[in-house]
Length: 550
Ligand code: ADP
Image (cartoon, rainbow, N blue to C red):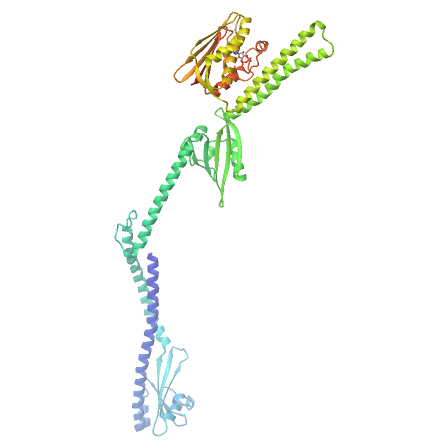
């Protein structure tokens, strides 16, 4: 600002000085010229009188005179000159002032000297004898006057520069002081220059706008943080240089870091090559995905590069826990392999027996045994296929019809149908407890109870017992199936609910087990939001406790 003011003052000063210089030079030049010309005319009049009366006598007295006096005869020849040798002077008949004097009685002219800095002014008068008296004087030209004035004006200019500098500094201070005192927090409260009012109003308005925008931005940031902090998935935002801009709690837990990692390079949090390569890929192609194990769980990382018209501005990393999915996939693969295997074994046995029969390789008395074997294996296949169908129905999670039912009634039906099996081994079946009223899917509950009771008989000892107890509480209904059988060794207890898992394969096969019974139980119970607990001791017996919400 000071510089601007200084420049403006200086510019105005220089222009004014320059105009003054020209005007003053012109006026002075005119003024002095007029005076000198007047003097010259008066001198000429006096000299003319002198020449008319005393001729050469008068003129010789003027030899030391300042101005040049020349007496010219009517033919232009020089009769007298007080400053030059007349023998060397040329004829003056062609001089402007001479010709004018001859013609009109008076003549005047002026001629530039060689240097242009001087003019010679001539005044001539026709005397009564026909001769002409001329008087001339050297005058400084306007250029000389100008050159003469340049030096004082130069000094004035330097002075003007110094004065302009001080004035600029003072003016700038005077302007800035009230501006400095303006409270920008409340620009409209202070009274300063009225010229500043629109400017201060604009500041006030802009401040208001910035405050709103900040509030809005904070609100959005808060909402964003709220959303990402409640996300199950890990979320990380990176800038174009892969530095962390934002990280949510799930991602912090996954990478075992804190909010302090914000601003650091992502490599300081995770160095896994698979992930850094995926980020690189997302930066180049827009998207990348990878999977790897971390903290004993399987994670899938989806990385998206964020591009605007300015180019890549960062990337987003989303981490999903896909452990369940991976386990389910593994289970499905194992299940398919197991199903094929379980189906193949009885089928091969059936085909083998059938081939022997077909080729008459079986003795007549053995034929019924072979046919019986084929029947048993085929029945096993049917049971197995039925179990598989039931499981896949449960896997589909289809909505099944629910109804009001009594668990006691179902247990009663089941035990009745298993009575013959129990009788074969003298196993006592017993039912105790409440009515067990609840809302549920009859078919599933029947299946659960049947499988548990069947196992309790299958894996029981001869003369053993099975006790089913139903307990009704305020919000839940429980059913316990307890046997006095062979029990399940500790190391197998957690796995018996897996598909096709059997503690003793040969025993299970002998008793017609498929290894799917307990997995159907677990699935069917969880379908009805119930819980299953298995308590068993090898050689003593097994107790399965199930609770359903009413
Ligand atoms: P299976 O069709 O072989 O009985 P399950 O899924 O019903 O298959 O049971 C899985 C395994 O758990 C059985 O093979 C058996 O070894 C064991 N098991 C289940 N119930 C009992 C029980 N009440 N007593 C002892 N072992 C049992």
